[in-house]
Amino acid sequence: MKHRTKDYILITLGVIVAVAGLNLFLVPGKIAAGGVSGIATIFYHIFGIPLGLSIIVLNVPLFAFGLKLLGKSFAIRTSYALLLYSLVAEIMPIPVSNNDLFLGCVYGGALVGIGIGLVIRSGGSTGGTDMAAKILSAKFKSIGISAFVFGIDFVVIVAAGLIFEPTVALYAIASLFIATKIIDFFTVGLSAAKAFYIISDKSDEIAKNIMQNMGRGVTAFTAKGLYSGKDKSVLLCVLNWRTEGTKLKRLVKSIDAHAFVIVADVKEVLGEGF
Image 1 (cartoon, rainbow, N blue to C red):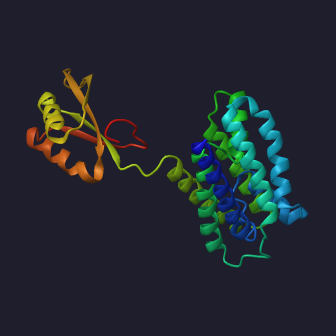
Image 2 (image 1 turned 45 degrees about the vertical axis):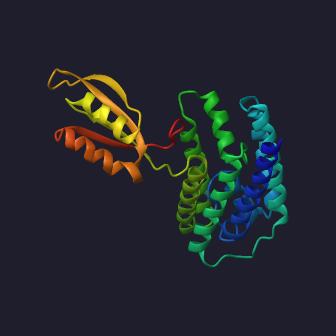
Image 3 (image 1 turned 180 degrees about the vertical axis):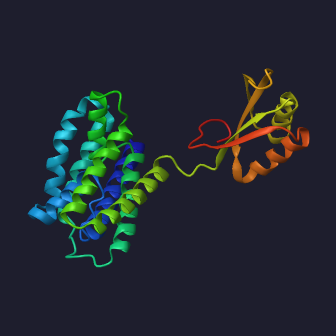
């Protein structure tokens, strides 16, 4: 119950922050940064339809069609976030205009990203593009969700550029990029972990030193060099780049100066030591 209450508090906070970015910065500047909120922004300026009304009317059919794709807990939290999003969008005042499109783009995208990131992190969703993409992806299994998300957002932004002006569409793309990156930060995080792939003739000695001197686990894969025709072990070790990266590179070099080392980004690490 305590955990659930915390989630709903964060969903509420996230919705308020996201709507603040939309109502105070994006809508006044006619920045339709994709998705349902972008369509609602266009309807608001062209037909004078209240923002909250457009959001709820556009999202309800998507929610109904996508209900089978959602778990019970996610569906309940999403319905709560969706209703609250529409209500707050209707209540929160919208300034007449935003003369500084650059600041509107940056702060609007940042606030929307923070808000939606909090909602997703708490096990919910505000519907919109993601929901439509899931429905379409379930029907057309050969096309991924991300492709549909990009396609829908692209159509909305192009429409806004044709209806308003091309400059506004460019700001919308920048705002969408900012929001997406911040959402990734909240849902995935800025992981400091890196994956080291080490190929060496002295892999056993390197692995032993990593485990003894650094306290990190090592996994070995059997691979074959097609140029040399020899079987070798490829070592995989995940560690904290900031505090252990340099130490590991020096350790490998001290044992085998000719070792081949690949350092790869890691989005998220779960388990012992992380």
